[in-house]
Image 1: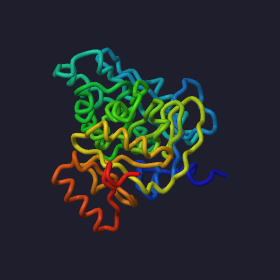
Image 2 (image 1 turned 180 degrees about the horizontal axis):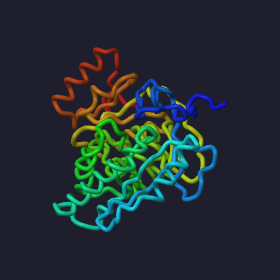
Image 3 (image 1 turned 90 degrees about the vertical axis):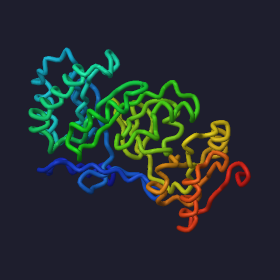
Image 4 (image 1 turned 90 degrees about the horizontal axis):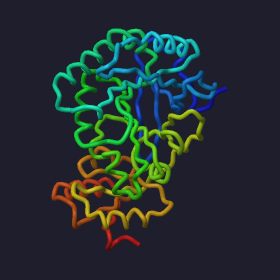
Length: 307
């Protein structure tokens, strides 16, 4: 019998799946149709082992694509028969051309519409989500992806495979995932920093590493248990990175979140202690800090209050 976190509600659903992520100081879990669900996404080319509950199916939506997805439809049908959900990976090859080419964007738009009219129409009730990118983020990519995502059903959970393998510290890591601009995208992250700091923001693991939400791999990985994330670091709009990196190092093995300044009031639920950087804070942030204290939270000013 499957335990909590591995329950598969996909076997009996007959409507569009509702995927929801709770990532607060109290808990960090993913839900499908209001039931706890640990996503075990198989990205291999053969049949997935029994331990997996989601199958990644890649689709060519590039400019060269013939939009012949018969094999993908066959794989999806077999997956549904086995009680698996589907993660569609729409492959646009964005980095192989200009993001300012309107004709190119129109082609992508038409290809997405074809996907909606065919595979999405047939399998939306078994679709866990749609991945729109795989690789290293470059300037302009995220805004472009948001425009493409707007063409999909607004309730669809959109994922990004983000390669942060080159990141060596928290500054380069947050830059690699562009944390403050992710918006509604859910990242699936690869890299040593993602493995070392799995709690800083909600993400699935790509390849190796642990997560409380799930992973995408050819091999199974253990679920990271939900913990009480009592500490958070407030990331200023314009960070003083020398200070911020020292603060990260001071946290050592203590699990913590990183909360961007502009999202603070939306994401501080369950946080007991908030570390701030007064020299880099805006006046708006200072007003939010007062609200945090009024709600019973403790403010730690770095470096004066940090030990």
